[in-house]
Image (cartoon, rainbow, N blue to C red; front, side, top):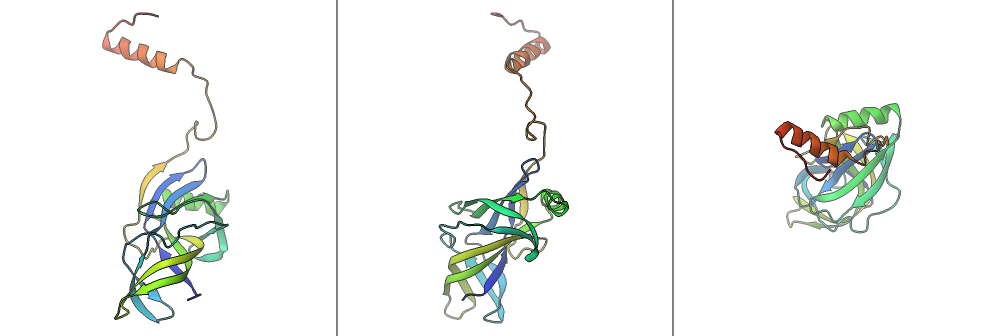
Length: 192
């Protein structure tokens, strides 16, 4: 049970270019996927238990596909209690390939795929299906061919002046907006 298994998830939640962050579901919980198991040398239906990655932490790298020679960044934050699955925020390095990955993720062309070691499992009696109940995350790959269906970008936030750290002082912005609205509507503001 110590072989690294590779599983692809299906949901990229958000891409934030200015911060170089991809928010995604790395592994959906309770979603069956047909995967090839090396030890069994055959295809089986697999699900991941919501507690499988409880307490996940550590320095987890992000790679292009599962190629450890093509690092893209690191996991910045884990959210294992998200009911949809193991949620992670990836910090992508400022490299040419990192730039490409941000664009491809924003366009919905990449999905997460995890490399993990299964530490505990529950098999059906006929051994046609397995439930991973405890696993150790090794890395997250970004790939165009996920094992889990339903991969889609839910939200994309592009860089803006505000996101890029440019702050414009606007202490009277609400008052100005209200004055413009009143002017367009033909109202007069009192108490100015």
